[in-house]
Amino acid sequence: MIQRTENIIIRTICRILIPAIQLFGLYVIAHGHGSPGGGFQGGCILAASFILMVIALGLEETKRRFTEKLNNIFSSLGVFVYAWTGWMCLLLGANFLDYSVLSAILPADPIKARYLGMFSIEVGVGITVMAVMVSLFIDLVTGGKHGEGL
Amino acid sequence: MKFLALITSLLTGALLMYATIDFPVWGDPDSPASLHVSPRYIEKVMEETSVPNMVTAVLADYRGYDTMFETAVIFSAGIAVVMLIRRPRQ
Image 1 (cartoon, rainbow over the protein chains, first blue to last red):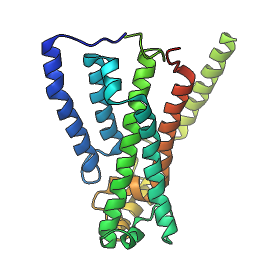
Image 2 (cartoon, rainbow over the protein chains, first blue to last red):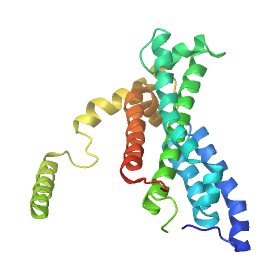
Image 3 (tube, one colour):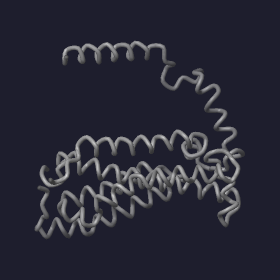
Image 4 (cartoon, each protein chain N blue to C red):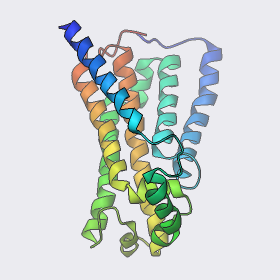
């Protein structure tokens, strides 16, 4: 059983580190198209913060904050967001994932619409990668029993 | 059975190693990819996609379909692990 740690040093450090890691993950996702980074890397950084939470605060507390149901919803939501960005372009009369036509439904010119389309697919990738990494970690480390191991 | 699997993976590995002999040299400017594919992207990326970052243009625009199925592969891997390993408390 991955138990809650009562050590005040570990808990305080985690309290400081986890928001910083998550903020950095969001930064990497949001600036993925201008600089090194993107959905895959940012999603992994976000997942690392949850893994730190599991190691330091215990599986029970982590699953109270990021429940199994939410995790499953998130892992499919990312692919859903990505695929629907493509389908919206298709429905608006262009090729699959040809973001320029999104300017018809977004308050932006075609170039800005391309930016927003790419941003939304990066966000979709990030959500899926984060949820799948957390679920893989929890399943593998506890042998699928969600209560023993580590 | 394990012995058979070992032989199979060794043979496949040897075949793949043998196939790499025909690859162009690492970073060869005369390889087909450097002659046709890269210059095409480098020259046309601004006018076709308006993306200042070439890596993003290839990842999210020219090969957006590829990236979508990379995400789908990660999702399927997660679902497969959930189906194979997860045994919630009885």
